[in-house]
Amino acid sequence: MARAGSGRPKSARLPPYVRELFWEYGPRGVSWSRHRGFIVKRILSDGESRALRWLRRNMTDGELRRWFRETRGRALDPPRLRYWEVVLGLPKKEVDGWIRSMRKGPWHRRPGA
Image 1 (cartoon, rainbow, N blue to C red):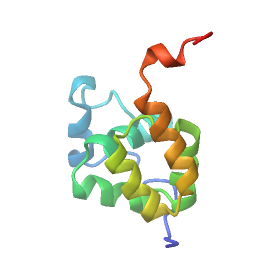
Image 2 (cartoon, rainbow, N blue to C red):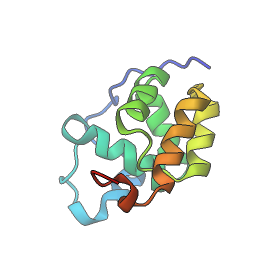
Image 3 (cartoon, rainbow, N blue to C red):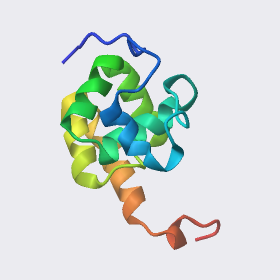
């Protein structure tokens, strides 16, 4: 499912429907160039369809796959991870591992557990 996306917004300003996801930071508190990973995480976890469309226009599938691998999908719940597994062609075994890790509480992730 290759898609064209420049990886860079056509404008340095986030559209209002994306900016509203960052209400706690004020109008100039978040910028694509400085906070890209944070913006991606918030859009994927809380964004509505037009914010997701904006993200898809501004990032390639490869860039999104890289974001998922770097973060191990930590921002998303299992149903959303499964959705992106299918859309982006993420390896099922890899996503299974992220979900397994997520389901283990912090007590299971502490050293020596």
